[in-house]
Length: 136
Image (tube, rainbow, N blue to C red):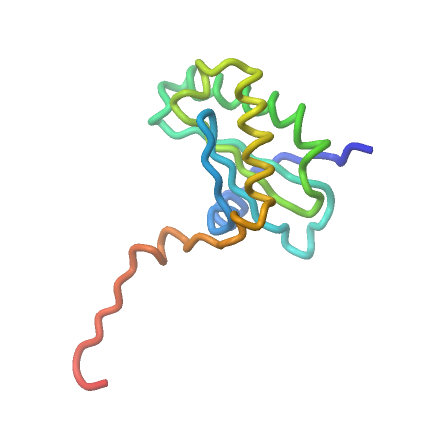
């Protein structure tokens, strides 16, 4: 039976997932993190495309293509209780749909494998430097 897929819309969810696991594929970037205990249901997914991808028409097309790929794959291969974010890349719009689906399938396999279990530092933590002045 296929799990129900809910769409993420809150900025806080996107920020929380950005601190989780990340896998890059030629057509997209996949991020994943466990859902908070209060919302453990089926898999949830969010979509984003920065201005690097193109103008608004191009970004929206990229998100539509990722939505279609996620609707095809995540109900069967997504892990319940996990939140996913799909990030568009410049190649998302031109990439053949079958290749985009294969990218998502491969990214899901890699993110669930033992090699992708290391957690990334949050962007604000990665760039912080600690300055210690005076006696310690």
